[in-house]
Image (spheres, rainbow, N blue to C red):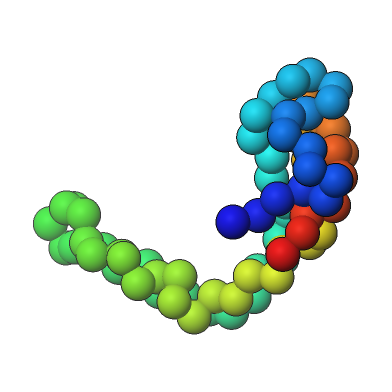
Amino acid sequence: MKKIAGGIQECPHCGGVEFFVRATASGTTSVFYRFDGGDAENGNMWDYVKLKEKKTAYCTDCQKRIGTVED
């Protein structure tokens, strides 16, 4: 579970209760389709994509920087 350093429990700017961090993605994936136009199984499409999360947290509601994420 990710937490923000300093024990922040809500956005100090707007009171929002969710935050996000930006991440860079690298790798390759395959997207599967059916010939009849139906949905194909794509549950494993992210298995070979690597994410590297940044440390800066932003409020989901107001998009302002709110702190640094602890591991």
